Length: 65
Image (cartoon, rainbow, N blue to C red):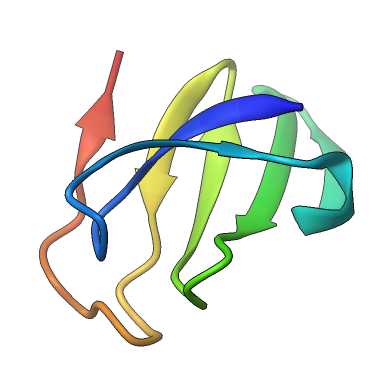
């Protein structure tokens, strides 16, 4: 399980490993793409949650330390 910030919930949520959509290695480090139970999507880049602009909660991009 892992914790992310979900803009649709406007809070941190706990997701199961089954909510991981992809895991990629980049020159800047690994990027984990996730999808919340509510359908919102985001990424974890070096452990920092980044919210995607598309999906059910197309609000502003937000970084959470």
